[in-house]
Length: 191
Figure (cartoon, one colour):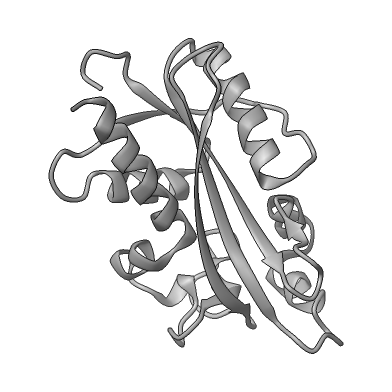
């Protein structure tokens, strides 16, 4: 990556930026990023379609290599909804509303999905890196400071993301899994 322009992570979310920097800087050969907050309209579609369109637009705006990230929270009972629209559901109805959506359903199972998209620059096709974590939607526990972390309990942990120390969360989270794939790809470019 040294011969290329600096890699830009397009996000305005400070919590997301902190997690991404923590994960990408672990171990040998850390991947260094800068962040830039841009207003990019999000299309409606699958998580993959949203990620590709967002990354294409971001690469044009930054004029060089960049990564974007999209997160989805997919309820089994609702056949994958709210999915990539979780940010809007969270803003409108909060933790309690996200729980209330499952009242009357037999399952509270959910899947957290993170899709990072990488573009080498304007006009290049984005490459996707996806991570998934199965879990359950529970009443909010832990600090309510990072999206829906307080209501998502990964299977077998007994804790919500919000209750976990960041190093534990980063090892098992949908974001951590996607970033491991992205990191391996970025490091292969510089070797």
